[in-house]
Length: 295
Image 1 (cartoon, rainbow, N blue to C red):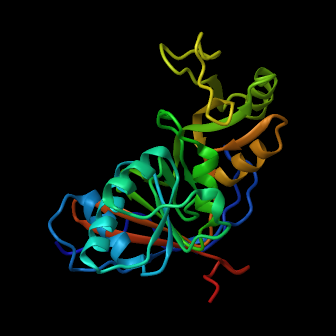
Image 2 (image 1 turned 135 degrees about the vertical axis):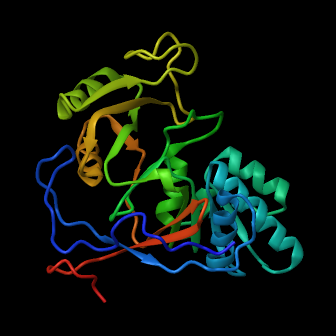
């Protein structure tokens, strides 16, 4: 099926806007530019087409590849294994972001190494819960963390990559973000961190500790999630649109007791977006003071 280049969002802005995480003061971000997508992708389901495109376009023989977590990443891992078995690609080493991606890679015959063994990774792909238009800043970690999964491990692999691609569906590429940002906090005195975060976003968000089982409530119930790293997970649930995800991340980084969070800000970064009409590719670029793409 021919790939579509119909716009999902304006590729450039003619002027800079300044608004905070919920509408107050922001620095000019990188801009997103639309790139051409191939026209020779097969008639597979949209997300599988995007996964195949990502592997075909960005993975080269001899690479160390970060293997993401989620439905699209599983499809890309399986297809990468097929390419290795066919001899189209050679000498690939996979660095998994989770137990799930390690398991999928093992089943697909991809040689693996532990993420702590690499300070630099040639390329990584991953799913994202949502991506901010223009900046390509993403949120990960909203899904239930299965045994052995770690936002810390996932972010380490993505941040170590020379280049990062998020494989998403078009409904996850948004100008006005909503929903939650997961935050890892030290289990001891977690409530103090939660109260400080609540004060940061007073009126714009609610802060709930994530439960492992049972119904959610602000305290996480009797069985709160404890990650393999020994941390609790707070879900900062925004009730107002997030106008500046980067500022949300910066604010969370300053909170005592916060270990990490699910906001990924990476340059260069690419979004490969699946839709019924084809595959669209968005890349972030640094802008100059006039707001034009820096060449």
